[in-house]
Image (cartoon, rainbow, N blue to C red; front, side, top):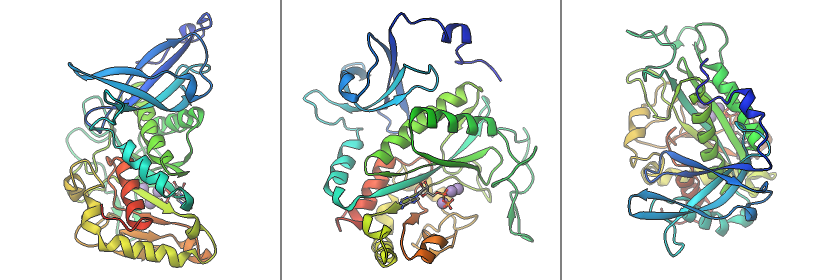
Amino acid sequence: MSVNNLIPPHYLNLSTNGKVKVEYVWISVTGQTLQSKTRTFDFEPKTLEDVPIWTYCYDPIKETYLKPVGLYNDPFRLAPHKIVYCETLEKGMQPSHFNTRHRCNEVMEAVKDQHPWFGMEQEYNLLGADKHPLGWPKDGFPGPQYYPETGLFTYHLAQGTGNIMGRTIAESHYAACLFAGLKIAGINSEGLLSQWEYQIGPVEGIQLGDQVWVSRFLLHRVAEQFEVVVNFDPKIVPGDWCGAGCHTNFSTEEMRKPGGLKVILEACEKLSTVHKEHLAYYDPAQGKDNARRMTGRFTSPPLENCVVGVMDRNASLRVPLLVEQNGCGYFEDRRPASNCDPYLVTEAIVKTVCLNRKL
Ligand code: ADP
Ligand code: MN
Ligand code: MN
Ligand code: MN
């Protein structure tokens, strides 16, 4: 392990003479990456109201406001230092053209009486500094990901040398998320060697997008310390190798109550009638990135049509076994790509399911 960006204990433990380091984090103009910079405070901010608006320039002549919307513990600098997650606003306090949070928040406000909950399963790949999948042979492929005779996946949910790669990074990120105060539901190894998943949720409304973006920031920062690269592309190895998604689990209060299964199936029905429209919101390339992944093979959903299924991991919309058994709970939209914008995904689901609105 390298010590890239890992603060030596000597400096970590130095007195700050009462000062507090606050890391401002926001989504860049690309809509896909994050940016951050640090500011020294004379006091420890306890609530969002304690954190002033700041600015940055997304292009040489465009100064943009950074408006704090979330306050977290900093797992790198430790207490009392903070991470403050921001949305970007233009002069006049209008949302910037790459601010997808603003509209998502308006939609979440409109349905807050229905208490929409989300859980997102963020899959990602780890690459070496040379951008080659971590632990893969330099001139070929690792052993098969799947054995049809037994139905067993080699790397998914696995242990043991050769079967997993980068667990220390997944574990360190898990610890960092919990310390920061994110609602991380769990982690597991995924279908490719050095592919992993963590889940954020269940959380209500705009919280899902906020927490997924902050969790991505933490993941990039953790991986830096190991000189490893995090890649969110939904299909890093073409052909019959597992892609990466962001399965989105969703429920409203009605779905979580006895008899909710009926409401869940109605929601799935609504979603299937606007399959193509939703795919345009489920990756940053209006569906083109996801089309590489959605082959209908190796637990990826098909591209052309929307399949509703109970238990079925090749379905587009899946009702989990325990939900069918309990007659209420939530369902899973398996279509969003690993590089999706969670604000666009959750907004689209709520518009279709809760507001009966066109996207
Ligand atoms: P899978 O079996 O598809 O791998 P996971 O266990 O990885 O499922 O993820 C399930 C996700 O669903 C978790 O993020 C969890 O927080 C979320 N979840 C659980 N209950 C609900 C609910 N009622 N509404 C929305 N999301 C939920
Ligand atoms: Mn999962
Ligand atoms: Mn998964
Ligand atoms: Mn899933």
